[in-house]
Length: 374
Image (cartoon, rainbow, N blue to C red; front, side):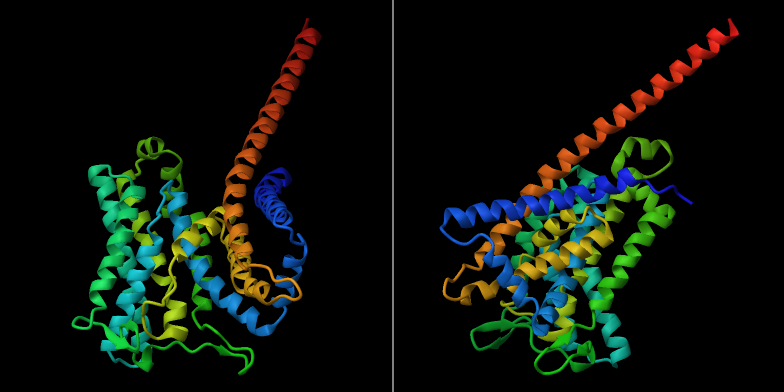
């Protein structure tokens, strides 16, 4: 059994806590500067989150955020910055919707097929960046940014009326998917709504992420390569193979992140399908420190800010702009980076002092033994 390391736990928790506190304080400063009450918006959002229908919206949104953040976290653990999760997720959702609208199998075959289409599409798109990195040394940041733009153009082309597009009013869609591909959720009543059935997929992916990274040789090799490619290569690990594998896995998870909404509610891909999911996943992965439990907490927090903030527009007698929640999310990103570096530096100093004290104590014991022997 590993000995409980209280200081290590403290360091792990200190970063996110400091980041949240700093973000709240800075947001309060913005509110005060604009002549608004710095406390009331938080109370209004907490009150809004008390309604059961809003809680369902938060859980559903958090499931998508969680999968997107896991995709980012896989890259982070390999010291890779997959900034293309948004393009991978949107392209995967579109291709899944196209297949779902043109293929009709029994439900027990249709749903797994659609999940595979989403995962493989995301993996393929991320794999392009992975191949460019291992064969030509192209930065995955540059490659995935460009692939995001290309994905947008590909989606626009494939949803044209003469390709796979179906015009519904002023909206270009891929047509409604066959019902055999719909994933039923947990119906909590007409006033509360329905929890997406693929929320459980997000939970399973979180468990799989932890098991693979912490209990398998592949996970160890992946983390070791992320720490030092040179050291990993010296121990027999093919660093290029691990880079490509990490990008493929990251893209595969990204490809699943839009499916809770697609298979559970929308049942078609259209111009109104949400964007920016991948970039929000970066914030969540950073705040959760690439830990599945921390990412779950961060996903729920960001989903809460998204779904509870509309209450600010309807507050009386003074209305607050719901963009306050967006400001807070942005401040969280800055606070996370600063607080984590500050905590890391503090931890290093603590470790240096502890090692110095242990060496001094050991030297004192050796001197004592020499004196006794003399």
